[in-house]
Amino acid sequence: MDGIASDIAVGVKRSSDELLSGSLYNSPNSSVTANGSDSKKLRVEDSMDSPPSRVIHIRKLPNEVSETEVIALGLPFGKVTNILMLKGKNQAFLELGTEEAAVTMVTYYTAVTPQVRNVPVFIQYSNHKELKTDSTLNQRAQAVLQAVSAVQEGGSPSSAAGESVLTPAPSPVLRIIIDNMFYPVTLDVLQQIFSKFGTVMKIITFTKNNQFQALLQFSDPVNAQQAKLSLDGQNIYNSCCTLRIDFSKLVNLNVKYNNDKSRDYTRPDLPSGDGQPPVDPSVAATLSKDSTSLLGAISPLSAAAAAAAAAGRVALSGHSGPGGVLLVSNLNEEMVTPQSLFTLFGVYGDVQRVKILYNKKDSALIQMSDGNQAQLAMSHLNGQKMYGKIIRVTISKHQTVQLPREGLDDQGLTKDFTSSPLHRFKKPGSKNFQNIFPPSATLHLSNIPENVTEEDLRLLFSNSGGTVKAFKFFQDRKMALLQTSTVEEAIQALIDLHNYDMGRGHRLRVSFSKSTI
Image 1 (cartoon, rainbow, N blue to C red):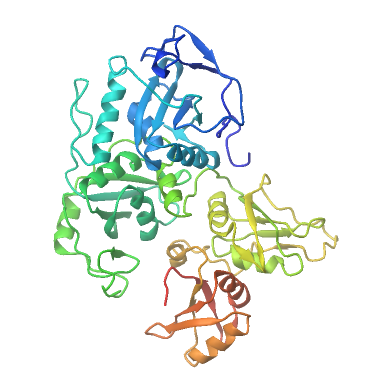
Image 2 (image 1 turned 120 degrees about the vertical axis):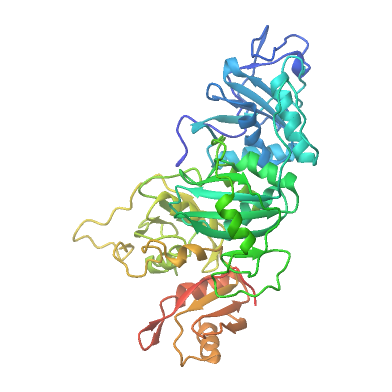
């Protein structure tokens, strides 16, 4: 599997390793103690057609792994109802509340390698349908589970096994610091990740001490507790953009503007301001006092990415490297060109090279600047319609796209865009990083000359084969929103008209918008 460690297998395949089983699982002939020793061992044969189970078997766990770390693997997908730690075997069994949650978990980890303490682990369905444990033999694990369950159900975690596992959430507001921020993190990305754990009411983002930070308010402190437990220490993108989360001393955020810096989801009527919203004085005072001591990373994998994947196609985990090459198939070979692929995939990263395959012209290799950009493009464009056909986008095994040998005519099927002036993300800190959205029927237009009218732009986009349903100029008339009938029409218009010469040195800039008109 491209982009996934070769020693990891994730999915529905049953392990041929010895699974510890017994009275804890209602099997009459064997028993297991909580420390992982077994009186009888049950060998489970490999089976690809065995049905899913809400009990998940986790193997190859690192030494000294904690129960909290194992529970955090399943927490983004639903309620965790039971756990059995087999520390002597570096294994664990996790029972989820529903089979659907377990299927979602295994399906997600099929595409994204799960990790605990940066060590890849093996996840599969158990052959048992229910996990029955004796709490006297498994006290510590049960204590942690009870504490997490109390948080999930809105209660107060209690002390068990002689120690307090979790303390009640002091505030519904989380303070989030992004470490190792190789790629920008937008307000919308944070909302999608954290909304998996409850209703996100308000977000304020800001930079302090050269670090991107955010204050995020849930509707309930219990949700904040859950999010902190699962996400603290996780990477949004592969090997970078690490979340450091603590509770804020604030209990309420005062948001004045809805824009790319702050958002109050309970008040969509707020003005957009000038893009640099002032921070409420009470917030400013607290920023300097708020505790910055954060718990260590539990890193069960990118649980943040899991949450994001569940909320929307955002996650960028599972592949990295200097050359992220995509394989795009089911292309319309009569219409597609290297230039059209460069323009569309260039919305999500800087395309370096494109090769339409000579003997299979409905397929192409696209080399992005890195693996994270490749993942981003794949997550947004796989399944979209281009020239009337639903395209398939996957990570290729190739690390680079080879150029044809000198003097060899490949009919223009390969093109090198390494030095293209049209790369959107070559400038560090570019605002384009903050405006990456999935394909949508609404397009954002910028760099519009002063003399160009709404009618001019409607006519221009209608001529590309689409229907303009709505149009709105921004106040300065240098930017506008234009809504087409379908996402496919918007994709076609972007391909045709991004970098269109509007005269007087103005090249039209076209991108997808999250807004509607």
